[in-house]
Every structure is written in C-alpha cells, then in structure tokens.
Length: 200
Image (cartoon, rainbow, N blue to C red; front, side, top):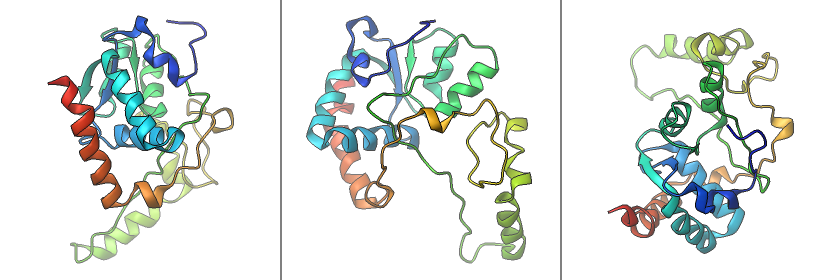
C-alpha cells in the first residue's frame, strides 16, 4: 500500500500502472458512467475521450459491476480500482490494505434515489416505505448492512467511516445534462466506438 498515493488523475496514466487498473464499463455501471461524465465536465468532451483512450493501455479489465474493481484491488488482483468511495470504505472496514484517493482536480458524485412505480402494486405501503427510508432512523441503519454512504437526510448521523466531504473537491456536477437519455446514449455510443473497441 502506498502511504501517500498521488492524488491527480494524471497518475492513472503512469507507466507503472500498465494493465493494473480496473474500472467498470459505463454501459453496465452507473459508477463508470459517472466517471465518464465527470471527465467530460472536468476536461471537455474531446479531451476526456483522448484521456480515456490513453488510459486504456493501463486498464487490465473493464468489469460489469461498478464495485468489482475495488474488490479486485482489495485482494491484490489489481493496483487501482476506479469506484465510488463508499465501495472502498466497505473493503477497508473488512481489513483490506487499501486507501481512498480523491482527485485534486475534482470528482463527480451521485445522489442515490428511489422511485414509486406509477400503477404499481401496494401504493399505500410503498409510500409508507418511501417516507420511512427518508427518516434519520432509517438512514442510520446503513452501516449494519455494510453501507457507508453519506446520508441524504441532514439530520442523520453520518457513519464515521464514510467519506468526509469537507476534504473532497466536488465538481458542480450537471445532473440535468448528464442524466438525460439523449446525452447519456450519445456518450455511451462514443465510448463504445472510441474506448470499448480498443479492448477487442
């Protein structure tokens, strides 16, 4: 384990990381799509795709699951997993000799959500459950299920193991633009053509 790991995305291109990074495929993973959208917002679209194309030489595997890369890092199968930080915390709590690194350039993030299905069964009970999940008491149950996200309810106690957002440079993530189907589908099609095709 590196005691003071580099905190710039440029380190991902380092020759020492050849074939020793894992990240999920953004077609199957919201985690990886968030990474792709973050790079586009940080660098501009063409520059982000150039960055990811150059990075491909260091990618040993594009996984299907967003959390698989950090499980591989935890067991020593890869050096670096590009994942959401709460997935790293799960492995650290379990004893893995790994550390979380936040890019100094800034990082994207997600806000977990729920939906009620229109016309779905048991709408009254579904609403009761929905309302309960938003309470501090419910959100504070996360660590019991190895879930260390920062709660969405400000009145909830944040698990001490959770990422400390005050120490992380977050970008002003544009959820409206990068959450739209048209933009998402266009970026994924470009990823398939320019990045995914490199693995074949």
